[in-house]
Length: 233
Ligand SMILES: N[C@@H](CCC(=O)N[C@@H](CS)C(=O)NCC(=O)O)C(=O)O
Image (cartoon, rainbow, N blue to C red; front, side, top):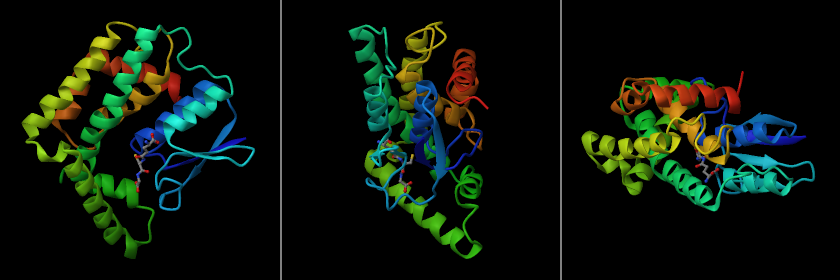
């Protein structure tokens, strides 16, 4: 049995982390037998991050893209039937989402004062009371540095929303009435992208970004369809 080392569930998704949720979706699509092992501190992981997959033969595979590649070596072709052009489009859309839209979602969770108390309890609520506030405050400062260095935290609210809105438009344009991004069934792009939209629509405070998703019927229908196909329960 495969074991996925993952951050625990929160906010109605099977992990806090979009990358862990992507790995869960890929494992679900692969049909492999797997179990989650929940961790809250990834510092001892090979890349200091989660997800990490442990295989039956003792391999430890960090990074959701490497987990995908491992499952592909076992014969699970997530993009079966896609043209070369669609594969290129899918790759670009995944990169956009993972490198930009996800940072926008993290900005809302971690840096907005109206979201933070709920996020803090969801992510750090299980820690002993004496450690909870210092660790949460230290992690928030680390995320602030990361998102400032990335650039997303440097923009005004209006500029940030314009930029993230363009990512959402690219996703909507790709969907273009189809049930999933590139086919009538989920592919690798859906596993990577739908969890991020799901986390945005379920942000714990009212933000412009959340409204852009919640007020778009096509995106909301897609999120519900993808949840049922990728991480049902
Ligand atoms: N490229 C990696 C990114 C994974 C990643 O950034 N995970 C974050 C959580 S979303 C993490 O573990 N951060 C370290 C921490 O939270 O301390 C992947 O695709 O798996």
